[in-house]
Image 1 (cartoon, one colour):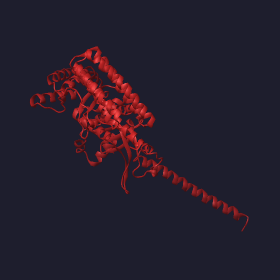
Image 2 (cartoon, rainbow, N blue to C red):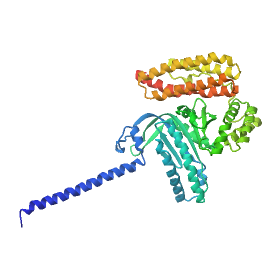
Image 3 (cartoon, one colour):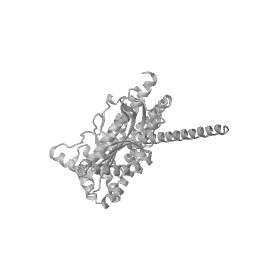
Image 4 (spheres, rainbow, N blue to C red):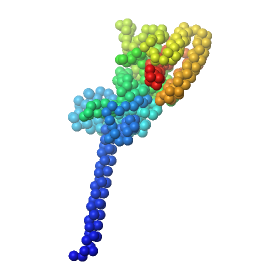
Length: 454
């Protein structure tokens, strides 16, 4: 044996072993990458980023963070009846076909799918509120294309309902030692789900809350009309609901735009129990847009009221709103401002409804002056306290001022129906004041107290 060859043989053997181990290590690394990607299909990477986690191995029970999000719920109409006509395999094939159409309409709009709940989708939009509305409209457009394909294959078209709401939520992990999941906890989530359910009642595909409306960059970019005031379980005040009808067929959309003001006037009269005026306007709307499902529903409710003396949603009041300590933020300076603001808004609505328009000028001036002063005070508080939601809060202040300026112009023009105009004051100014106090300013109050140790 050539002894000089022995070291070379050993080196070759050692190199072969190193190559084998490196190959195994590469395989293990790739397996880890593939495993993390697979987990990403169950736990969105964006959700982990919310919790400041780089990978799923860092997830721990009880982790949490607070964010402002827009929540979207989408659901197939009458899925139970539809599923009963299919085998279990056909049900899964149909669901996966439908969901694969909807997912690409969410992710490009910076949304993430939080979970699938049977045929329902819950999606979160952490950036701009407009992302959620644009995503919803894209989903409806994709659904039209999907239904054309179903029709060619001999299947019936499907309909979906979408509800969108905006608010501050808690994201985190819940469960036990053996099983946990990421979740979002907030009444903002409940309201989004409630809006999706309401879309079935009104026969329209897309509803948004007043919180979402006021959070949009520019609501005039969309085709939106007021649709309802709904008292959601657990809420102190009725919530205003709006229909976004950009996804309607062009003819229907154009007709709704032409009749939008008349429709909203009808609802103003309906909610103060002036049924004859409400009914007259609804009939005129339906003469132009016979397929307008919400107008049909409200006309039926008017007829029910004339028969029985009651109907859902009617609030017999003077379009006013009394301050309640339930609206308190716990910050005396803010609460005092809100109480005074609500009093001024009540005086404005009464003067408008009674046609005393000259009396509105000094009231409008006081409201504008007091709002500007108080908003500056609040914004200074937020800056000093390094409040995380300062940008969103300031946006809400600007929206109030925009609405006030718009309504001031309408009052001074003296061209609007007084009841309708007073109702708009209630929706856009009074409701804003109350809900801003209950939600936005109360959250600020908790933050300020936590910093002071209160």
